[in-house]
Amino acid sequence: MFKSQKTICEKKDRKKGFTILETLVAVAILALAITGPLELAFKGISYTKLSQNQIIASYLAQEGMELIRNIRDSNKINHDPNWLNNLSNCISPNLCYVDAQASSLSPVVCMGNCPIIKYSDSNGYNYSSVNPTIFTRNISIDNLVNNIEARVRVSVVWEERIGQRRVELEETIYNIP
Image 1 (cartoon, rainbow, N blue to C red):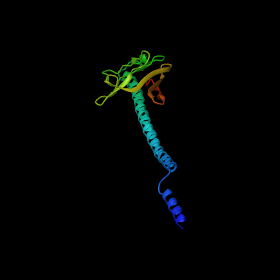
Image 2 (image 1 turned 90 degrees about the horizontal axis):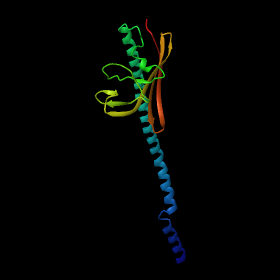
Image 3 (image 1 turned 45 degrees about the vertical axis):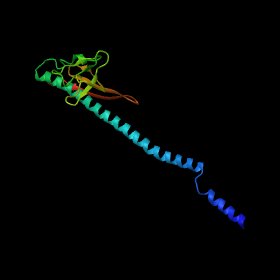
């Protein structure tokens, strides 16, 4: 009778704690349960930054298009016979940029690459602030048809961890009678 009671007690003592294998399995399950949501959160933050940059690039491209239209409209208001006056620096194959903060809206030819757009809290995006951004804006005008229409292309380029990104706008502007 004593022998059987001893065997029962030994079996109870063995089941009191976890084995190393059980502990490792529990840690592995816990690690998988934590890394999945962390990976989703990290990707969400990355996509949020990418979306933010795409929105900024879209606004910068739209601003570039509006600056070209503004120069064209100013030529008409000033009764300039050449409706593309001051835009010759942008005629393809040249690339140019226009600084919205400059005292006069005059396109500047890009020698090689156009400069990086800069930013300041007080003046927004421009080419004269101190803080460089990741964005570069290129403007080109081509496909002149009988001095009546021209195609304007504005491209904003920037680098992300996944590679170079680009937002492009293309619009045809006309010589308004």
